[in-house]
Length: 202
Image (cartoon, rainbow, N blue to C red; front, top):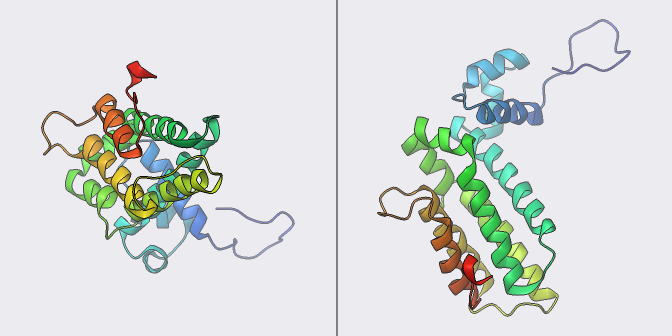
């Protein structure tokens, strides 16, 4: 909990929504199951305040994961120096490989399989719609600069890209594809209209 220098005697400053998210992020990265009671105790908050801000434990996890994903997607795009469809493919490929390597995500899925899938992949949740929105923004940026002509409308393409990644990275029910990022790259290349999009064809 933070205090203001020179504040003088009196109660500490109230914890903020961002501090709750930061503690949730710390627990998630460390591979520990998120405990709302522990967070509220550490920050001196009422649990009702956390639930008012985020709605539920799932809401807190979803908000934290979504915010981190948005920043991560944009950082990856900033590292890719090319433009157009190949820039998008390279961006999405790097994003997918980073997610596939994430120890925090792996532990989350191991510890809370059904709940984790609901938080990560539900179109009615927080994470997937915000991931789709960021991917759409990245595609639209290439369209605006005249570097890419998408084969379908951008919202549909972005939704397909995210849904495909979710299936390949998280869904054990689809035999033989979980974590197969090379095949995922090839299918995303087809969606984007990139010929020779496999890693061997780069």
